[in-house]
Length: 82
Image 1: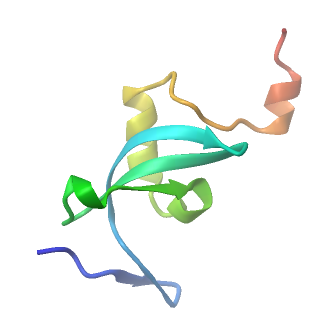
Image 2: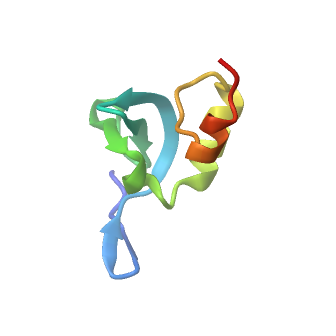
């Protein structure tokens, strides 16, 4: 049975079980999210801003897939040598 959403700062949120993939779409970072208690048919691409409380899942994803798309800070980008 699917998990009911939890309330965080007055808003309902679903629990992220795992981040499965990442992509840049229209220059915005998105994550493919596996929701706790839901099947893979319910996986969704979510903007990074919707995953603010999924720090552990995001960190685990990037440990597993260090070359996966990510956004970097402008200051870091400016220091890259091309």
